[in-house]
Image 1 (spheres, rainbow, N blue to C red):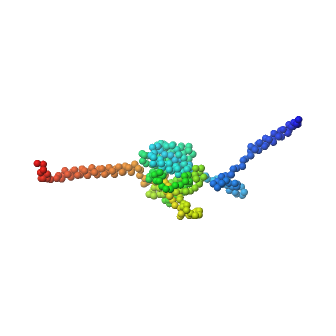
Image 2 (image 1 turned 90 degrees about the vertical axis):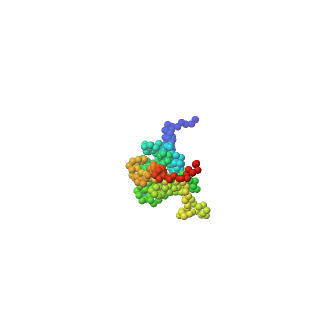
Image 3 (image 1 turned 180 degrees about the horizontal axis):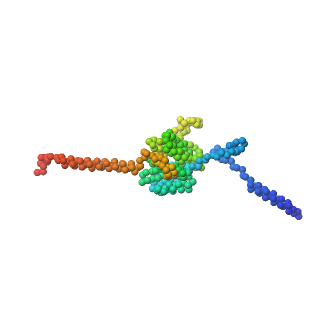
Length: 328
């Protein structure tokens, strides 16, 4: 028969087991290696944003772009403008879509609330009026600024059927014409569109490639948008150099549209007016002038008929002597 343990030995063993369990509980698991496009990082590397100063690590904050864009439209939008909205949403993988919003005076508060609920920082709102006119709102929420455009010359991808094609979700190169740096309101619009159309780096829905270009050009005080694919010839025997831009060509993909700026506001979907386009003419006014022009043609015809009747009454024709010869 074995000997019983002394009470002191039992207490010592229990304390050792408790200490071991506490050590296992407080132990930190080794950090998993980070995965990159080229494989797993096996060597311990200093994280981005840390610098060594006198042997001590100094943390430097790193900016990370978390831009998200809410894309929505108004009710009673026609099919062509809805297809344009879907084309723009497919080009921006960092965008989120929501149901249609009623186009009323209170749409600004509704859209700002939707942007906050969707955890976005920008908004593109396609507003259709009278099933004819399309207005595009670009706004930074909740503090602004925001701008209202009239959209003209709309051509969707399905309508154009161009030969260009690029990877869905890839990051674009944004190019702006030199006119954007001449006046303050163009500089503001450039910065606004740069933040909205630029896809954040390392976004989970984006691809780490640059194979297409967004071109923004100012012609006749209008902003023209084009989307081009960067094509490289594949018959090269060796890999193309980084500077071989002369061998690359641009093939248009679509969509196409033209933006006519109307007003720039200091807030989100409202606020003080920072800029108003003096050359803007509303589509209603253009249609009214066209109707007046057509009405003017009709008035001219009526007046010509009246003048002809008056002329015939004032200048009657002489009676022909041989007119009744065959009636006898």
